[in-house]
Image (cartoon, rainbow, N blue to C red; front, side):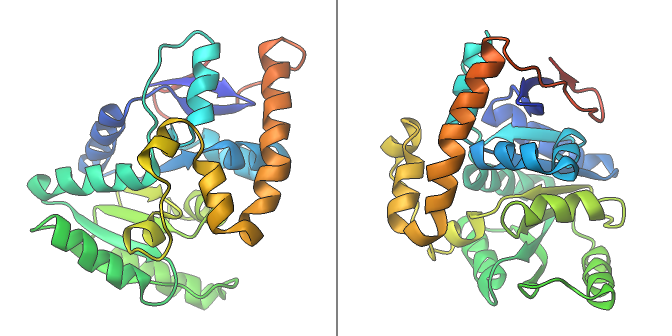
Length: 262
């Protein structure tokens, strides 16, 4: 799977169907993988945190959740692909996994949210197997608590682990745990837990298609989102222009598997 250098982050040039198939194959492999769902916010955080950048570039797959990342790929000469939106990726993988017999573990969200999400997904996809749910406390875990979480997940026998801790926490958690957690594939899907349980409203489809989802989220959650959009979005545009014009080089980091960064 080809990766496109996006300010040093290797974002895959991938369609939704290809991403779903890749996740299914990872789940079948029996080996450990993790998938990052990336947008402008996460790419900009990679500029400030070397560990966060490394974790992205060592992921089995980094999908372009944000519409601007797809546009950036087009400006580099790649053909247009649809956005691989994290909440939609979750639904598509769950739908495929029923026939495959895969089981899921839901880790993250506020207290009671993963259980509610399990009910929502099972009602939508009859026969979906949920091996476990857990909402960790919103603070740094003690070593004993962390070990208990890993043990709980491993003993569940899940094939797919959905991590809904929000960025950057979920990517850092996956990068630090994927060799300890015996689940074939982990995916960090952030707000999907709240979206699919109805706790947070999603932008209308026309706003998502036109790249205006950020405006909707800013309107819905201004106190939480204003800093991200006021500072990150303009900074991304400037740095992306510098890369496209050859004014700044971003050496791509090392990647795992057969993916290549160009």
